[in-house]
Every structure is written in C-alpha cells, then in structure tokens.
Length: 184
Ligand code: SF4
Image (cartoon, rainbow, N blue to C red; front, top):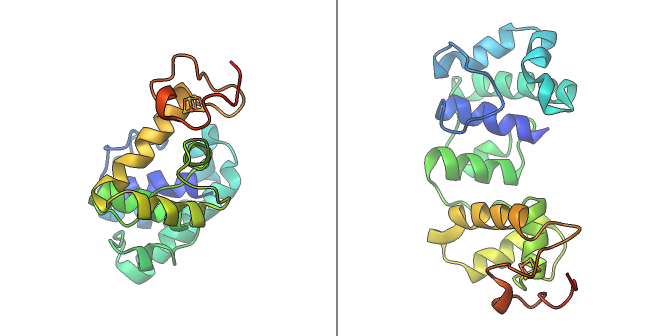
C-alpha cells in the first residue's frame, strides 16, 4: 500500500520530481488531497490501475488524503513523528518522503533490496527492516543515509539480485564477504 502513498505524498510535496506512477495531475499541489477526497474510489483506482493492488492503494490514498486535510491543511508534514501517523505510511515511506522531498536524513530506507544487500555485504545480520536500519545508521554517517538506499537498491537490481547474484563482474566483489557463496 505504501508504495502508492510515497508518490502521492511526494507528488504533493515536490510535484514532478519523482517520475512517480501517478499521471500528471493538473491540480496545484496544496489542492491534491482535497481532489482525491472529492474523487470517488473508482476514479482513483483507474488512475493507479497499472501499479497492482490498486484497490487497496486507492483506499489508502483516500484515507491519507483525508488525514492530510484534517490534520495538516493539505500539506505533507516534514517530521517523521507526524508522517508515520498517516494512514498507509510506515517508517520506510516516511524516510523516503523526508529524504527525497525534504532532503532530511531521518533514517535509512530499508526495502527488500536494502535488506538483502545488507546481509550479503555484512552490514547487518538481523532480519527485520527496523533492526537493519538501526545497524546501517550506526555504520554510516547521517550524510550518507539518503544516498545509501539508492546505491544499494541500484546495486541489487543490477548485480545482486535475489536468486542469481552476478558475483563475477560485480564491482564490489573484492570487498564482499558473500562473493564466494553463490558459485556463479
Ligand atoms: S559479490 Fe555477489 S553477493 Fe557480493 S554484492 Fe556482489 S553480487 Fe552481491
């Protein structure tokens, strides 16, 4: 669900910067939540149909938009404590929004790629995003937190995918403690 809230909130905060899954909406940013609340769920589902799980996501968009209107005047708050109280927004989403829209390093975004890479590269031996994030925040300085996730995600997509990591040719091979584990 939160994957749609990310571009929704991001688009409200910084329209056009994310290349998000929402099509161009000819609505001023501060009016987007009100527009979503006014729209019926079917109309929102149609906009995001290509993203998968679009019915649940449409519900979250409506709920999040209503909360933004009610509690924040339609603006996206710039504090993690407030973001995580919005429907459909967890710590991962809040970190994305703060990092990408506000330039605030509130933590490290831990998605499935970051989780996998953190284990293989020896950054964390723990198995929940919350605990892995703590380990990454201890290893890396705050100035690296925003970019770190992007680097790990791109590396995971290009070289270190879940089923068949391409250790031969991986630019991190000589430093990676898992390089000999996959026999590729
Ligand atoms: S050497 Fe292999 S396991 Fe290590 S980061 Fe590269 S692809 Fe992933």
